[in-house]
Image 1 (cartoon, rainbow, N blue to C red):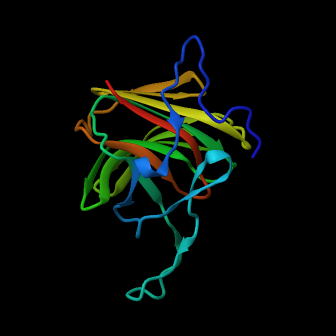
Image 2: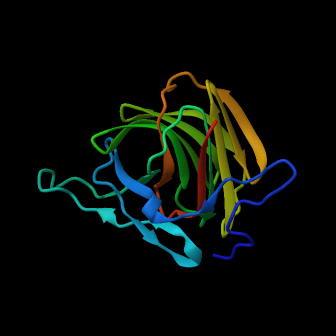
Length: 202
């Protein structure tokens, strides 16, 4: 992947909080309904990359189709309700690199959370409640593959603001998940690369 800058750029309107990712600062957890937790690997240019190895059928369900694993990792020791979360992600044209926030977990498994996902057709805001996913907002726009993009979300009380590459894409009100929770990164639907990540309580 050719990238001009692997971190989030500083502009007059945007001061980045994302720093180079260190895997030792994260802990891997599972996602309710998604099978065993996916792994994370070290990639080129200091990237952290999700393991896209497909999950084999289990002994209890040998005829079940294979399903790609979901890789989810939370910043260790961080919890907040009101927060800013930012990541520099490498977009290959496949996959849906995401930042997650207000993550609620039980026994090492995420059961509820918000997720902001970058994909070929734009940026989506998702809510997962007890393992069920709901799309809260979809912003369609062309996302150039082969370069890094800065994905940012601010959750303050019931207001969620989503930005991309230093600009604001949309703002929504969300009252479904108002508890303090974790923040981190998620890779699904293909290879997802993360070059930098930051989370700050407000």
